[in-house]
Length: 97
Image (cartoon, rainbow, N blue to C red; front, side):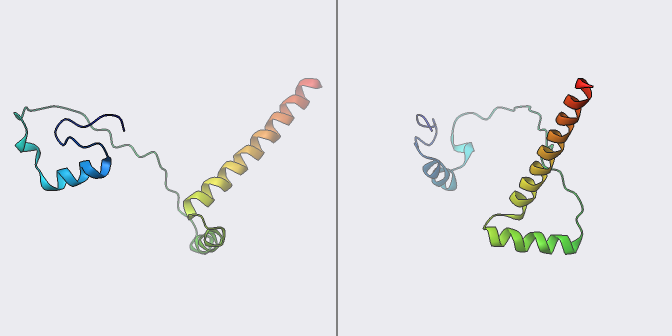
């Protein structure tokens, strides 16, 4: 984080948090109405999973010391890489014939 924030004069996120825990934005300057748009599109997708698979995934993730989400993402990425490799090899084979 570079510099300090104008209102809090803080130089770390912890200091900024502590400042705003004790203060209110209405204490600083004139309040002006502002319009803005918020897009709440999740960058995550959720898929139903069989409960037995879920329990197995949880156990494996715990054994590896990673989250279930990380384990699933790793596995899906690995599978996608395998599929892309096979497709690339098939494409090269088809081009040579």
